Image 1 (cartoon, rainbow, N blue to C red):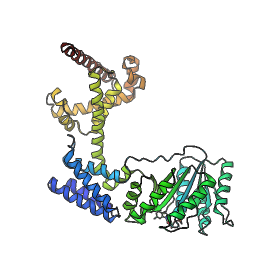
Image 2 (cartoon, rainbow, N blue to C red):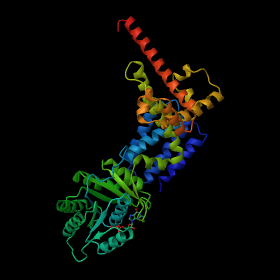
Image 3 (cartoon, helix red, strand yellow):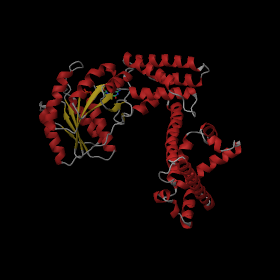
Image 4 (cartoon, helix red, strand yellow):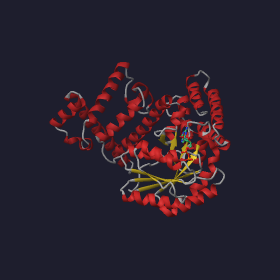
Length: 445
Ligand code: GDP
């Protein structure tokens, strides 16, 4: 798969000694090549890279990221948007019984996918039934019956009936009577790509007959960006539609198919990644992009970014507290400590946090180590507290302290120290607050 090359480009970019500007140019060229050879629409590719360049000039790297890391985080962001952004599809049935109808052209992997879905939901603990209503392909019933017995899921079929609508109706009502939770209907997929109209008309007929809760279109990844037209028409025709892209393992064009479908606004729920029954994955654009960029490299960068985001939220809360809104709870302390830890070694982090540097005299290596150790232990203590205790620390008496210390594997004095520190913080906040209001009074605020 061509998208695999991006990982190497990321590696080269992060570890190479090429100067930043030149490395960025090289990386963007590599990225364009990979995407285009994976059949991503050329226009999409160019708008992606110009968006990346625009952000490079307009935005400023956050202080805790190296410039190269920041660049990769932007690439990650924009690539994620290309493949569907924040769309984490919900795969849980919204009601029981839940009827899923699968449509797709012949050979797209529809029947295999029906069985994969059945297995996916069975593993989640649902009672699942399969309806073999693909009367166009003669072997479809046998194929589904065999797959069904392999995963121990009942299959409804009428091998001698050629009316797929009748079979679908009978299958659904039988399974509803048998108290099946999720009913998956494999419909006839007779038309080749390019005959979307007929496919969608047929879909409507069966839709009217069984009134499914969800219609899923199955698309073979190897059609690449041609998936756009089909997905668009389907998306417009079916308000409860989602898409599964199969054979992501067997083609270089997977990126093209994914980005084309994402561009229509349709939701990609799953991707098929092999012939075996468990080779079906819930599709999460961000996770997918993290994988093509190289999980190890990207995760460390993303952790820092997330840590920083959380830290900024906490900072905001602290500012609110100083201006008199709300009160500092141990929960806030906890959030702050966890965010700090995510951002990396404390020594690095402290250098970069505005304000903190002023508060603290330059700490020695040893002090930093102690600081990090303390944060770990405090997080452990906070983890052992109940939600009530976090929200209202004044209820923590000696026996609660003992319980918390035991739960965290700490000495009781360490818990006491944390609570004292917390009380001092609150006193400090109050002081700041009072001063502010004094100053405001002075200026007639
Ligand atoms: P249908 O005509 O749409 O019902 O297609 P089938 O379910 O019979 O699948 C056609 C072929 O594609 C079969 O050989 C399947 O094993 C294969 N297939 C389906 N999904 C995948 C997939 O995700 N990866 C790979 N490599 N093969 C798949």
